[in-house]
Length: 212
Image (cartoon, rainbow, N blue to C red; front, side):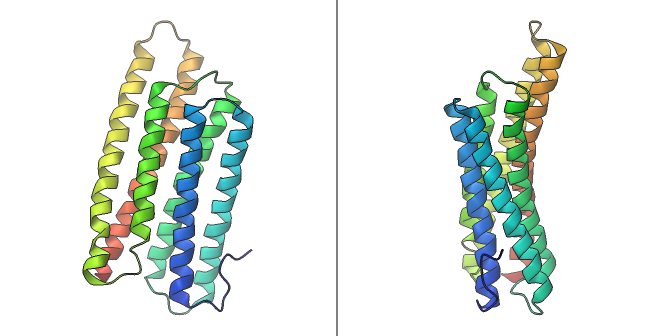
């Protein structure tokens, strides 16, 4: 399956695929926030997040296929591949966190889960903004650097929320070791999603420094 046919000019094709990946990430992160805010129809909502994760897999597959078929690319091919992979990694982490809520039989999310999910959706929205500037040159391309700074700030915020949540887990005498392990897995995947957003931002920063 190809989202952009071969006849599309190569720049539009690659930028379009990367923007599609960022848009799918944003949709996935919004679905996760909805799951946390309205914790009902959990199996259905998690299935939708899984569907979006599969869409992301199709997009990264299409990016790699186009890289193999295109001799000259608008950006360094390793940067295109790395950016596509990092965006896909965020979606994968969100999907795994969502799946844990079903697999672990979680009755309700914690405030930290909601807070982390909101941080991720803001980071995803900022990545989407940044990808929209990727085809620019000069000072407009450098505008991505402001987005990079914001994503780095959000990742630091996620680290603080995660650390506090883990500390609260271990200080709670009324929770079993098994429950601690379940919640630690969920927090870890949500933090991983924020980390992968930062990884994508770092790739974008490198692209700007090479091309602005």
